[in-house]
Amino acid sequence: MGRPKPPAPAAPVVNELSFPNARGQRLYAIEVLPPAGSAACVVVWAHGHGEHSRRKLAVFEAWAARGIAVFSLDHHGMGASEPHEPAQRLLVQSMGHLVDDFADYAAFAAKRHPELEGRPWFAGGYSIGGLTAALAVLRWQEEWAGLALYAPAIGAVMTVLTRIQKFLGPCLDAAVPNLAICQPVVAEALNPDPAAVAAYLADPLCYSGRTRIRTAFQYNKGMEVAEIEAPRLRVPLYCEHAKGDALARWEDSREFCASVASEDVTWTASEGGCHDGLSSSDAPAIAARMGDWMLAKAAAAKGGKAADAAAQTTKK
Image (cartoon, rainbow, N blue to C red; front, top):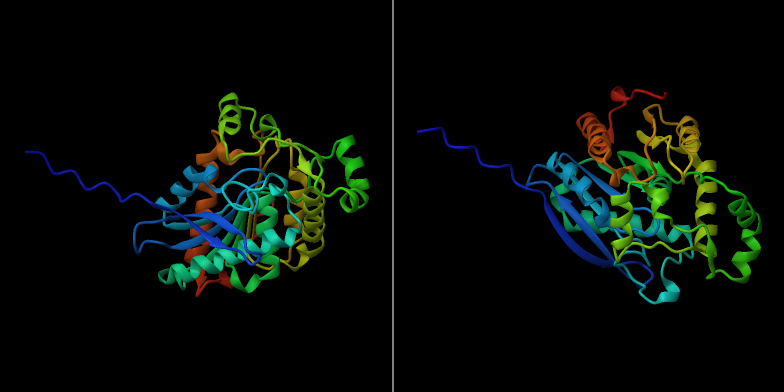
C-alpha cells in the first residue's frame, strides 16, 4: 500500500463585488484571497486604460497562492463599472477621480477584511493604472508599505499626431472634451502576439477605439503631476518596464525611479517584451519577480511600515 497523497494546496478564493464611489457610480471589483489566515501582505492593483480587473486574474491568482491578497477594481466607465451610457464610457473628467476611487476601494477592502489589519498594504498598477497607483501613494504615503509598478504610463511614446494633440490639448479640452479623436487603443501595440490580440479583441469588456480628448488631457496632467511630485516619494518602490514597449517610454520610468526620495528602489528594464507584459508569455516570470519583492518587503515590514534596516537601492 502506497503512502497517501498529501492534500492539494487550497486554491485562492476569487470574489466579485461592487461598491459605490463618492460620485454615486457603482464600481465593479474583484478580490483574490489566499487560503484563510495565510495572507502575508496585500496589494491594491489598478488596471490599464480600456481594460478591466479580471484580465490579470492569472497573475492575481499566482500572487494569492503565495500569500498576497489582491484587490482590483474596474475604473469608472471601464470594464463592468458604471457609468454604462455610451457618452460616458472611458470618459475621465479628472485624473483625481481614478485616484480617489483607488483609495476608496482600498478603504472598502480593509473594512471588509478586518483580518488583514496589520499586514503591509502595497499599491500597484500597470500602464495608466500604474500612474493611478503612484499618484495615490504620493497623496497618502503613510498608508502604504510600498509601490509596485509594471510599465507605468509615466510618459507616453509621442508621434507627430500625439504631439499636435498635446499642444492643442487645452483648447480641444475646453471646446470638445467628449470627442474621441486621440491615440486609439491598438491591441497589437499592447502585445503583438496574435493569440493575445485575438483575446483582447474578443473580450467584450475591453475597448479598442480612440481616446476621448478630456481623458487624454487628464492622463497628461497626471503624468505631469507624477513628474513634479516624484522627489517626494519615500516608500519602497519596484518598477519594471520592457524596452520593447511601444506605448509607454521605459526611459520615463527609469527617470521617475531615479528622481524619487526613497532609498529603497528596485528598477528593472527588461530586454524586448511589450507594454502588456502581464498578459504575455512573460507574465509568470514578471509576476514572480514582483511577488518576490512584495513578500520580501512584507517580511521586513514592522506594523505595515518598511523597516529602515531593510532599505536597499538596486537602481540599474
